[in-house]
Image (spheres, rainbow, N blue to C red):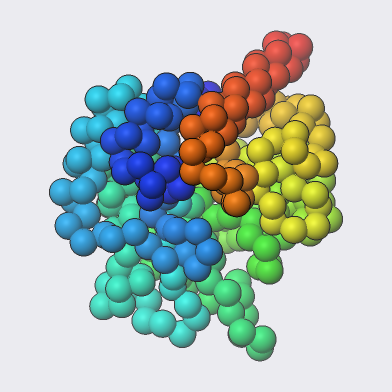
Length: 281
C-alpha cells in the first residue's frame, strides 16, 4: 500500500515538475493523475498526449514517484457520439493511453448521467463496453465509481453492474464520501461490496450532507471503522486521498502547508491499516 492523492490543484498552480517535487517532499509516494478538472469535469489539454505522457513519466521517475491511478475527464454528456469522432469520448480514450504510459493500473471513468425515462444501466453498459477494448489494449482497468445521482448508490447495485460487465477490464472505485451522503455508512458500503471488486478508493471526509471532500477527521466519518472494513474486506489497493474541496478559499501560499499536513493524515491512516491488519492475523 502506498499513499497517493489527486494532483490537479497543484499542477495548475505550480506546474507538473514542481508538483511532483512537492508531493515527494511531503511524503506522498504516488500520484492520482487528474485528467479532469474541478467543477465541470473538462479535460486537461490532451493534444500530443503521447509526448506529454512520456514527459510525465520522466518526471515521476526523477522524483521517485509512481502513478498508481488516474481520473478520466467527464465532459461526455448523454446523447453525444460514443466514438473517437467525438472529442469528449476521445479524451477518455487518450486518458487511458496516457495512464498506461505513466504506469497507472486503474483509471476512474464516470458513468454518464441520463435523462428521466432513459435506462441508466443499459446506456452506461453500452458506454463502458465500448471502452473495454481500449482498456485491454492499454493494459489498464477502468474503475466504476459509486457516483451521486446514479444507480450505483448501493453496494449491491455497483457490484451487480461490475458483474454485468463481466470482464477483468473493470473494477469498482469506492468513494467513501459519496456513500455517506446517500445515507450508507462508508464502512457498510465497503463490506457490502462483492469480494475482489474494489480496485481503488477515494478517501475523504464529509458532514454527511454535501460532497465536501475534506481531509479525513474534519467531518463525521468513523475512520477507525472505515479502515477496519477495508482490512476485513481484504482490500489490496492504495491509500488514495481525494480532498479536492479542502483547498477551497485557501490562500495559495498555504497550499504547501496543507499538503504536508494531508500527507501526515494519510500516513496515519496507513499506520492504522497495518495495525488492524496485524490484529487480524
